[in-house]
Length: 517
Image 1 (spheres, rainbow, N blue to C red):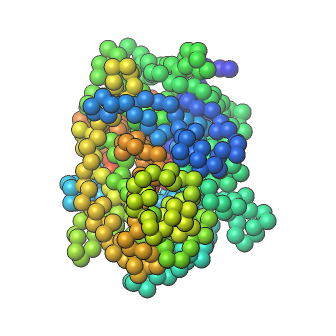
Image 2 (cartoon, rainbow, N blue to C red):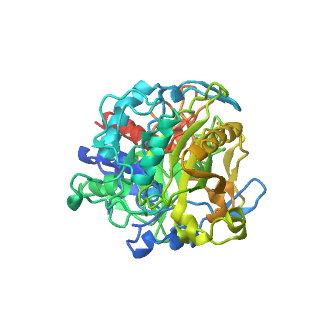
Image 3 (spheres, one colour):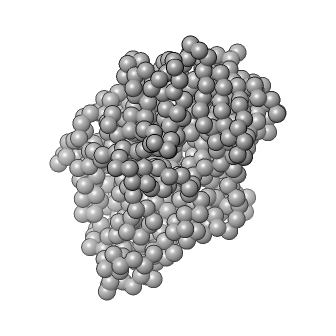
């Protein structure tokens, strides 16, 4: 195996996998270094106890909070990265998310490029990841140059009823954009079987539009693309000037290997990409590679989120529940002038997810027995923007692992959004007094451990004093170093970040194709 490449990509998720797919047809020598392996295909992929209670697929990493307390982050290392377990809700950021926004808790900064720059790449990413949706329903929907490539996923009866009830109380629900390989018109030929084990699960039949199935596997069919699995990248080395990365040092199956590339791209996730840069300090970069601005690791964001189940008056036998979204309060309303956020459904909860802890029994008994909860549960997810704060950051602990310091901010909009949703529940066929927070019954004891939407640690910008990357996502201080995961986000908006990472990877891919031509 050659150890010299045109492009070395560290990580194979939404950013790295998509970039590899864009570069693969060029004939350039592309190396993907993935810390994990192929996700094993096994019955446990669809077993709620294995996934949510036993944490079978969660890494054994140890991170620390600001007090030095160890915790296990909810992070996955497999080909395809976090997309193997995501809910495949592929939203565009709203057009106004790219500009400066005043929030209850402070300011959300403008991006150095506008929505117009991202729009064609959003369209390409939707096509690549086979997004199902319906333009024109969401009142906050940004302009689009093409329709969704596939029709919206239909609502099952209980969710259709919820949709209709929302319309009846003057709300504007919409079909959420889903990246699944579903053909409802020809079910006999549909790869997706519309099961109840999608959001939070790996897809056993490879019908979820994750970066593994959609991007990496087609990329490695090209002879010029090499995937090395179980490759834990430890550091990057530079020439004496510090302007060029010369070597990527990785432990591959426990043995050190060294790789060189004309271009090196990090896509290890916002926390681990920052860790790798900090771990690569040298004489030319004493505070960490590309960190002359002291911004590497800062401005960590991961959304203010709240998931809860409401108990439906009628049984909810929905299997694929994640088909409905609501953005009526995304930018505020007449009573609260600040942005709130996005409401969407999450995957249908099931009885094995309920661990039978006393808080759950206390909240529901005696009206409902625990075995009835799953039959009547309707599961909501609220997502509100947390704001970039330089003090919310990734640093290195004494043992070299990640220390994640995070103080929540902009929390009032989350309470406001929760209040607006719950006040409608009685009109939406729910018991308004039977609400259960998801963290009561899901195994996630440390709030910062939930890092699926992590972003912001190497923000891009035009000023090297306040950003790590330029507008092409190249490090200001290192000519051949790029970052294409969600680390580059200056702000996170209030919708799922995956599609933006995918679109940006396609955008940076075009830049690299021109650079390498």
